[in-house]
Length: 252
Image (tube, rainbow, N blue to C red):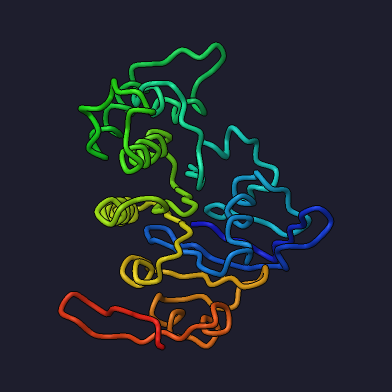
């Protein structure tokens, strides 16, 4: 699990996170939502020490990560950012990058590293594409490679910044279904999503951000039906009960 306590972050002299507090439980999918510029990505980057905090603390399973070496943090948290360059390497080589935190210098891969890569590729269904170049894959296939790399990293926490962006509907559902399986295996899954229907369908826990603050948190339905969401997005949702669960749409 991950706990954020009174976290303040500034960018170019202006505070962008105003003392936020959040709890992301183990074995659950937690989704951060909010308008553009509300602080979602900054929060994710602060968890990975990619953005420096002015004050506050971040705890991982009760242990402060404020002074944790980056190599140790990489063994505990995997991060799939929103945008990536497409390197001219094979799929298996890309997934092997997830093993870097466990290698000493010079980097020499061990049998267990190859086995972790094999299992990760099998888990995402890309074993047949292991020798393909990354630039020969579709967007959905590449996103599966990044997920496999995170799996090979073998961490208890996985962060995803808008992982469904640019994916077609089939691949969106497939990635979210696999995220559900990761949570069921006991991992702490934290992601940023914009599609509120997907949030309602997949999120166990939702954190709503607005203007650098957390304005609501809790179950998906409770947050999406709240006045805080209406204020943040300027919209109001209606909910319909169906055979496969509750669905939402924007009121007009």
